[in-house]
Length: 131
Image 1 (spheres, one colour):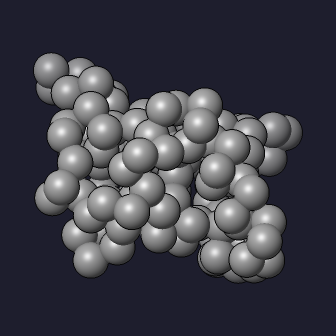
Image 2 (cartoon, one colour):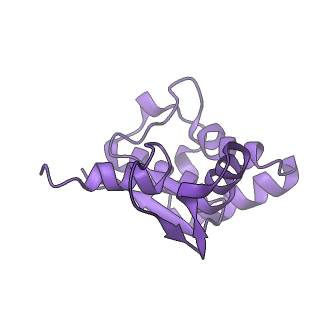
């Protein structure tokens, strides 16, 4: 507690701006990337699992997982196949049509994990994903 773990994750994820030093991921100094390059880096190379899951209440589990793939420009058929695969692996197929308020804490955690995994990122950042 209070050691700076969340701050470090925020810097690595480019949520916070680094004022001194460098962060190098996959041979890229992400502190030197321009805005468009940062957007591409976050979209294509990072997956996030937040402490409070950050699921959108107005979207089903399926739609929450699909959002990242939609942003990447994936086709509907590809999205459906990827979600079915990750949902099966994480045992959440039965909750894909549910909204966050209809899910248990463990189900929300697995949906948030699925959202992070489904884009096949180079790096997954998890801020106390188990509570």
